[in-house]
Length: 309
Image (cartoon, rainbow, N blue to C red; front, side, top):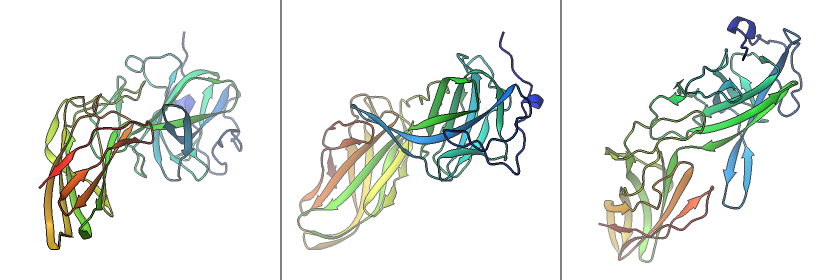
């Protein structure tokens, strides 16, 4: 029979004079409120995966996360989270996840499944799980997910999370080709997935949308490169794009000139955890999209697309 402490016993005792349990060695833990309890702390990194290797990169300071715990093997769709969780935490400069309420988490020895979600930002993630499923998710959010399943807690323990991107993203870079000067991308509008997707807590999988929204979204511009994060999209659905530029093209000054394109759906659709990176060149004779690749997690060449006036 699985035993849970009541929330009042678990109480995650408030700490004012002690630092939170530290990364890897769980240093500076406070005195335990009960000799049968152990201090559990957390740390975070980004997970980077390719076809040949896996690695991680440091979690920056100030990223807000939400952490949930279950007894090992519990199914979040039918079992309740451990008392006192979810609990919010913020990353520090060393990658430790420090509980926002100034507390520490004490748990009895045993095996646990830990999960954490984030929007990869300084905002506390507005993600609530009910029966193992999140509420409706939104486009434009970089959802992160991590797990530490079957973690054995037999002493003061640090749980290292490797956070993976669970949305999908498109990045479009526009460059000037022959016969073009003074190129400035004014805006890029892109088709976006229909909202309504949810995330499964035990897997981190975001359900893929089966249609596009009627409204286009503005890509975030950095110089002449646009980026947009969206919910995954099933195979077979292409994405429309509108590009507006100021430039001198073939000796003629153009202001807010509009070009349209359709990005064909890659095999498998626009998948979770992938950034699709496209490059387009504006020449005197028009605009051509070059071959695209998947960034960071996999290496794969996509089809070319053509941009029309």
